Image (cartoon, rainbow, N blue to C red; front, side, top):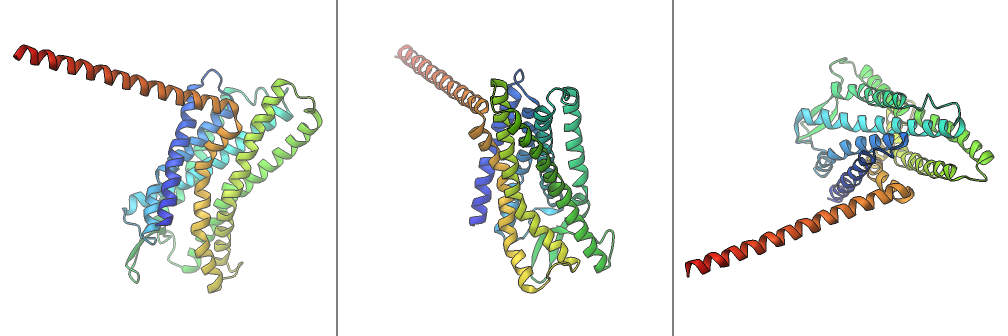
Length: 330
Protein backbone atom coordinates (compact mmCIF):
# COMPACT_ATOMS: atom_id res chain seq x y z
CA UNK A 1 0.00 0.00 0.00
CA UNK A 2 2.94 2.35 0.58
CA UNK A 3 3.91 1.98 -3.07
CA UNK A 4 0.32 2.77 -4.06
CA UNK A 5 0.34 5.93 -1.89
CA UNK A 6 3.72 6.99 -3.31
CA UNK A 7 2.43 6.65 -6.88
CA UNK A 8 -0.72 8.57 -5.89
CA UNK A 9 1.29 11.44 -4.40
CA UNK A 10 3.50 11.57 -7.50
CA UNK A 11 0.41 11.69 -9.73
CA UNK A 12 -1.21 14.61 -7.88
CA UNK A 13 2.04 16.59 -7.77
CA UNK A 14 2.82 15.81 -11.41
CA UNK A 15 -0.64 16.68 -12.74
CA UNK A 16 -0.91 20.01 -10.93
CA UNK A 17 2.73 21.05 -11.39
CA UNK A 18 3.10 20.18 -15.07
CA UNK A 19 -0.36 21.56 -15.82
CA UNK A 20 0.67 24.92 -14.37
CA UNK A 21 3.92 24.88 -16.41
CA UNK A 22 2.08 24.20 -19.68
CA UNK A 23 -0.51 26.91 -18.96
CA UNK A 24 2.18 29.42 -17.98
CA UNK A 25 4.22 28.80 -21.15
CA UNK A 26 1.08 28.95 -23.32
CA UNK A 27 -0.13 32.15 -21.63
CA UNK A 28 3.13 34.13 -21.99
CA UNK A 29 3.19 34.19 -25.81
CA UNK A 30 4.76 37.65 -26.09
CA UNK A 31 7.67 36.88 -23.70
CA UNK A 32 8.19 33.26 -24.71
CA UNK A 33 11.82 32.17 -25.21
CA UNK A 34 13.03 29.10 -27.10
CA UNK A 35 13.95 27.60 -23.73
CA UNK A 36 10.36 28.15 -22.53
CA UNK A 37 8.99 26.17 -25.48
CA UNK A 38 11.31 23.24 -24.76
CA UNK A 39 10.36 23.41 -21.07
CA UNK A 40 6.67 23.40 -22.05
CA UNK A 41 7.20 20.28 -24.17
CA UNK A 42 9.15 18.66 -21.34
CA UNK A 43 6.16 19.32 -19.07
CA UNK A 44 3.80 17.91 -21.73
CA UNK A 45 5.85 14.69 -21.89
CA UNK A 46 5.80 14.44 -18.09
CA UNK A 47 2.05 15.14 -17.95
CA UNK A 48 1.14 12.40 -20.44
CA UNK A 49 3.25 9.97 -18.43
CA UNK A 50 1.78 11.01 -15.06
CA UNK A 51 -1.71 10.20 -16.38
CA UNK A 52 -0.68 6.52 -16.61
CA UNK A 53 0.59 6.37 -13.00
CA UNK A 54 -2.67 5.00 -11.48
CA UNK A 55 -2.32 1.89 -13.67
CA UNK A 56 1.24 1.26 -12.47
CA UNK A 57 0.21 2.00 -8.88
CA UNK A 58 -2.49 -0.68 -8.99
CA UNK A 59 -0.09 -3.08 -10.78
CA UNK A 60 2.48 -2.66 -7.99
CA UNK A 61 -0.12 -2.84 -5.19
CA UNK A 62 -1.49 -6.13 -6.59
CA UNK A 63 1.97 -7.73 -6.51
CA UNK A 64 2.63 -7.23 -10.24
CA UNK A 65 -0.73 -8.53 -11.40
CA UNK A 66 -2.08 -6.64 -14.45
CA UNK A 67 -5.91 -6.57 -14.56
CA UNK A 68 -6.33 -3.93 -17.30
CA UNK A 69 -5.98 -6.00 -20.48
CA UNK A 70 -3.55 -6.08 -23.41
CA UNK A 71 -4.38 -2.67 -24.93
CA UNK A 72 -3.64 -0.66 -21.78
CA UNK A 73 -0.52 -2.77 -21.15
CA UNK A 74 0.84 -1.75 -24.57
CA UNK A 75 -0.30 1.89 -24.48
CA UNK A 76 0.84 2.71 -20.94
CA UNK A 77 4.23 1.03 -21.51
CA UNK A 78 4.59 2.96 -24.78
CA UNK A 79 3.79 6.26 -23.03
CA UNK A 80 6.46 5.58 -20.37
CA UNK A 81 9.15 5.10 -23.04
CA UNK A 82 7.99 8.09 -25.11
CA UNK A 83 8.20 10.22 -21.95
CA UNK A 84 11.72 8.98 -21.22
CA UNK A 85 12.98 9.74 -24.73
CA UNK A 86 11.11 13.06 -25.11
CA UNK A 87 12.33 14.27 -21.69
CA UNK A 88 15.99 13.58 -22.35
CA UNK A 89 15.80 14.93 -25.92
CA UNK A 90 14.12 18.15 -24.69
CA UNK A 91 16.85 18.56 -22.05
CA UNK A 92 19.52 17.97 -24.72
CA UNK A 93 17.95 20.62 -26.97
CA UNK A 94 17.71 23.01 -24.00
CA UNK A 95 21.41 22.46 -23.28
CA UNK A 96 22.31 22.93 -26.97
CA UNK A 97 20.24 26.13 -27.10
CA UNK A 98 22.15 27.51 -24.08
CA UNK A 99 25.44 26.40 -25.68
CA UNK A 100 24.62 28.37 -28.84
CA UNK A 101 23.32 31.40 -26.89
CA UNK A 102 26.41 31.66 -24.66
CA UNK A 103 29.34 30.17 -26.60
CA UNK A 104 28.27 31.26 -30.12
CA UNK A 105 25.96 34.17 -29.28
CA UNK A 106 26.84 36.23 -32.39
CA UNK A 107 26.94 33.52 -35.06
CA UNK A 108 24.05 31.27 -33.97
CA UNK A 109 21.03 33.44 -34.77
CA UNK A 110 19.97 31.29 -37.75
CA UNK A 111 20.34 28.06 -35.78
CA UNK A 112 18.20 29.52 -32.99
CA UNK A 113 15.38 30.71 -35.26
CA UNK A 114 11.73 29.85 -34.70
CA UNK A 115 11.72 27.52 -37.72
CA UNK A 116 14.70 25.54 -36.43
CA UNK A 117 13.10 25.27 -32.99
CA UNK A 118 9.81 23.93 -34.43
CA UNK A 119 11.73 21.46 -36.61
CA UNK A 120 13.68 20.22 -33.59
CA UNK A 121 10.44 19.78 -31.61
CA UNK A 122 8.95 17.77 -34.46
CA UNK A 123 12.10 15.62 -34.57
CA UNK A 124 11.98 15.10 -30.78
CA UNK A 125 8.43 13.76 -30.78
CA UNK A 126 8.87 11.75 -33.99
CA UNK A 127 12.07 10.07 -32.75
CA UNK A 128 10.58 9.45 -29.29
CA UNK A 129 7.52 7.78 -30.80
CA UNK A 130 9.63 5.76 -33.24
CA UNK A 131 12.14 4.50 -30.66
CA UNK A 132 9.28 3.35 -28.41
CA UNK A 133 7.57 1.30 -31.17
CA UNK A 134 9.13 -2.05 -30.06
CA UNK A 135 7.12 -1.70 -26.85
CA UNK A 136 3.89 -1.54 -28.86
CA UNK A 137 4.92 -4.63 -30.81
CA UNK A 138 6.24 -6.86 -28.03
CA UNK A 139 4.50 -5.76 -24.81
CA UNK A 140 1.56 -7.95 -23.91
CA UNK A 141 -0.11 -9.68 -20.99
CA UNK A 142 1.45 -12.99 -19.92
CA UNK A 143 -0.46 -15.47 -17.75
CA UNK A 144 1.61 -17.22 -15.07
CA UNK A 145 -0.19 -20.47 -14.20
CA UNK A 146 2.00 -21.12 -11.13
CA UNK A 147 1.19 -17.84 -9.36
CA UNK A 148 -2.21 -17.28 -11.03
CA UNK A 149 -1.12 -13.76 -12.02
CA UNK A 150 -1.16 -11.83 -15.28
CA UNK A 151 1.91 -9.69 -15.90
CA UNK A 152 2.52 -6.88 -18.39
CA UNK A 153 5.78 -8.01 -19.99
CA UNK A 154 7.76 -8.27 -23.25
CA UNK A 155 6.99 -11.32 -25.39
CA UNK A 156 9.29 -12.05 -28.36
CA UNK A 157 7.43 -15.08 -29.69
CA UNK A 158 6.53 -12.98 -32.76
CA UNK A 159 10.17 -12.97 -33.90
CA UNK A 160 11.76 -16.05 -32.31
CA UNK A 161 11.01 -19.22 -30.39
CA UNK A 162 14.67 -19.84 -29.55
CA UNK A 163 15.53 -18.94 -25.94
CA UNK A 164 19.07 -17.80 -26.82
CA UNK A 165 17.72 -15.47 -29.51
CA UNK A 166 15.08 -14.19 -27.08
CA UNK A 167 17.83 -13.30 -24.60
CA UNK A 168 19.62 -11.38 -27.37
CA UNK A 169 16.42 -9.43 -28.13
CA UNK A 170 15.90 -8.60 -24.43
CA UNK A 171 19.50 -7.45 -23.96
CA UNK A 172 19.64 -5.58 -27.28
CA UNK A 173 16.47 -3.55 -26.74
CA UNK A 174 17.31 -2.83 -23.10
CA UNK A 175 20.88 -1.67 -23.76
CA UNK A 176 19.92 0.36 -26.84
CA UNK A 177 17.15 2.20 -24.96
CA UNK A 178 19.58 3.06 -22.14
CA UNK A 179 22.22 4.22 -24.64
CA UNK A 180 19.87 6.32 -26.80
CA UNK A 181 17.57 7.47 -24.00
CA UNK A 182 20.18 8.29 -21.38
CA UNK A 183 23.91 7.71 -21.93
CA UNK A 184 24.52 9.43 -25.30
CA UNK A 185 22.28 12.48 -24.60
CA UNK A 186 23.86 12.86 -21.15
CA UNK A 187 27.37 12.76 -22.67
CA UNK A 188 26.30 15.43 -25.20
CA UNK A 189 24.90 17.62 -22.40
CA UNK A 190 28.11 17.20 -20.39
CA UNK A 191 30.18 18.38 -23.39
CA UNK A 192 27.89 21.40 -23.91
CA UNK A 193 28.22 22.40 -20.26
CA UNK A 194 32.01 22.05 -20.33
CA UNK A 195 32.15 24.60 -23.17
CA UNK A 196 29.57 26.81 -21.45
CA UNK A 197 31.51 26.68 -18.17
CA UNK A 198 34.72 27.79 -19.90
CA UNK A 199 32.93 30.69 -21.63
CA UNK A 200 31.12 31.81 -18.47
CA UNK A 201 34.38 31.76 -16.49
CA UNK A 202 36.20 33.83 -19.14
CA UNK A 203 33.61 36.42 -20.13
CA UNK A 204 30.88 36.75 -17.50
CA UNK A 205 32.89 38.20 -14.61
CA UNK A 206 31.34 41.65 -15.04
CA UNK A 207 27.77 40.68 -15.76
CA UNK A 208 25.40 42.95 -17.66
CA UNK A 209 21.66 42.61 -17.06
CA UNK A 210 21.22 40.45 -20.19
CA UNK A 211 24.10 38.21 -19.15
CA UNK A 212 22.57 37.83 -15.68
CA UNK A 213 19.37 36.54 -17.32
CA UNK A 214 21.41 34.06 -19.37
CA UNK A 215 23.25 32.84 -16.31
CA UNK A 216 20.02 32.46 -14.31
CA UNK A 217 18.42 30.43 -17.13
CA UNK A 218 21.62 28.38 -17.36
CA UNK A 219 21.34 27.59 -13.64
CA UNK A 220 17.76 26.34 -14.11
CA UNK A 221 18.65 24.08 -17.04
CA UNK A 222 21.80 22.75 -15.32
CA UNK A 223 19.69 21.84 -12.29
CA UNK A 224 17.13 20.07 -14.51
CA UNK A 225 19.90 18.01 -16.14
CA UNK A 226 21.55 17.10 -12.81
CA UNK A 227 18.22 16.09 -11.24
CA UNK A 228 17.35 14.07 -14.36
CA UNK A 229 20.68 12.22 -14.07
CA UNK A 230 20.19 11.54 -10.34
CA UNK A 231 16.64 10.23 -10.86
CA UNK A 232 17.30 8.07 -13.92
CA UNK A 233 20.85 6.73 -13.36
CA UNK A 234 19.88 3.95 -10.88
CA UNK A 235 17.09 2.77 -13.21
CA UNK A 236 19.38 2.54 -16.25
CA UNK A 237 22.23 0.94 -14.28
CA UNK A 238 19.93 -1.79 -12.96
CA UNK A 239 18.33 -2.30 -16.37
CA UNK A 240 21.74 -2.54 -18.07
CA UNK A 241 23.05 -5.00 -15.45
CA UNK A 242 19.96 -7.14 -15.97
CA UNK A 243 20.47 -7.03 -19.75
CA UNK A 244 24.16 -7.95 -19.42
CA UNK A 245 23.23 -10.94 -17.24
CA UNK A 246 21.28 -12.35 -20.23
CA UNK A 247 24.53 -12.15 -22.25
CA UNK A 248 26.58 -13.72 -19.41
CA UNK A 249 28.53 -10.46 -19.12
CA UNK A 250 27.29 -9.79 -15.58
CA UNK A 251 26.68 -12.10 -12.60
CA UNK A 252 23.64 -14.31 -13.03
CA UNK A 253 23.62 -15.82 -9.55
CA UNK A 254 20.37 -16.06 -7.58
CA UNK A 255 21.61 -13.49 -5.05
CA UNK A 256 22.47 -10.91 -7.71
CA UNK A 257 19.21 -11.39 -9.61
CA UNK A 258 17.29 -11.14 -6.34
CA UNK A 259 19.05 -7.84 -5.62
CA UNK A 260 18.03 -6.52 -9.06
CA UNK A 261 14.45 -7.64 -8.45
CA UNK A 262 14.26 -5.97 -5.03
CA UNK A 263 15.99 -2.75 -6.14
CA UNK A 264 13.97 -2.33 -9.35
CA UNK A 265 10.76 -0.88 -7.76
CA UNK A 266 12.76 1.75 -5.85
CA UNK A 267 14.79 2.74 -8.93
CA UNK A 268 11.59 2.92 -10.99
CA UNK A 269 9.84 5.07 -8.38
CA UNK A 270 12.85 7.44 -8.28
CA UNK A 271 12.78 7.72 -12.08
CA UNK A 272 9.05 8.49 -12.00
CA UNK A 273 9.61 11.20 -9.37
CA UNK A 274 11.55 13.19 -12.00
CA UNK A 275 8.32 13.86 -13.91
CA UNK A 276 6.90 15.58 -10.81
CA UNK A 277 10.01 17.47 -9.65
CA UNK A 278 10.63 19.64 -12.72
CA UNK A 279 7.78 22.16 -12.15
CA UNK A 280 8.95 22.80 -8.59
CA UNK A 281 12.51 23.34 -9.82
CA UNK A 282 11.25 26.01 -12.28
CA UNK A 283 9.32 27.69 -9.47
CA UNK A 284 12.35 27.64 -7.15
CA UNK A 285 14.96 28.95 -9.61
CA UNK A 286 13.08 31.02 -12.22
CA UNK A 287 11.82 34.38 -10.92
CA UNK A 288 9.75 35.02 -14.03
CA UNK A 289 8.05 31.63 -13.87
CA UNK A 290 7.35 32.14 -10.16
CA UNK A 291 5.75 35.54 -10.80
CA UNK A 292 3.61 34.09 -13.60
CA UNK A 293 2.46 31.27 -11.29
CA UNK A 294 1.53 33.85 -8.64
CA UNK A 295 -0.43 35.80 -11.27
CA UNK A 296 -2.23 32.57 -12.18
CA UNK A 297 -3.05 31.87 -8.52
CA UNK A 298 -4.27 35.46 -8.02
CA UNK A 299 -6.43 35.10 -11.14
CA UNK A 300 -7.86 31.86 -9.74
CA UNK A 301 -8.60 33.56 -6.39
CA UNK A 302 -10.22 36.50 -8.16
CA UNK A 303 -12.41 34.16 -10.22
CA UNK A 304 -13.32 32.21 -7.07
CA UNK A 305 -14.23 35.47 -5.30
CA UNK A 306 -16.28 36.60 -8.28
CA UNK A 307 -18.11 33.27 -8.39
CA UNK A 308 -18.79 33.49 -4.62
CA UNK A 309 -20.10 37.03 -5.06
CA UNK A 310 -22.36 35.97 -7.92
CA UNK A 311 -23.59 33.02 -5.85
CA UNK A 312 -24.38 35.33 -2.91
CA UNK A 313 -26.20 37.78 -5.20
CA UNK A 314 -28.26 35.00 -6.78
CA UNK A 315 -29.06 33.59 -3.33
CA UNK A 316 -30.22 37.02 -2.11
CA UNK A 317 -32.35 37.52 -5.24
CA UNK A 318 -33.90 34.07 -4.77
CA UNK A 319 -34.74 34.79 -1.13
CA UNK A 320 -36.23 38.17 -2.10
CA UNK A 321 -38.42 36.62 -4.80
CA UNK A 322 -39.57 33.92 -2.36
CA UNK A 323 -40.56 36.58 0.20
CA UNK A 324 -42.44 38.55 -2.48
CA UNK A 325 -44.20 35.36 -3.60
CA UNK A 326 -45.16 34.54 -0.01
CA UNK A 327 -46.49 38.09 0.53
CA UNK A 328 -48.63 37.78 -2.61
CA UNK A 329 -50.07 34.47 -1.43
CA UNK A 330 -50.88 35.94 2.00
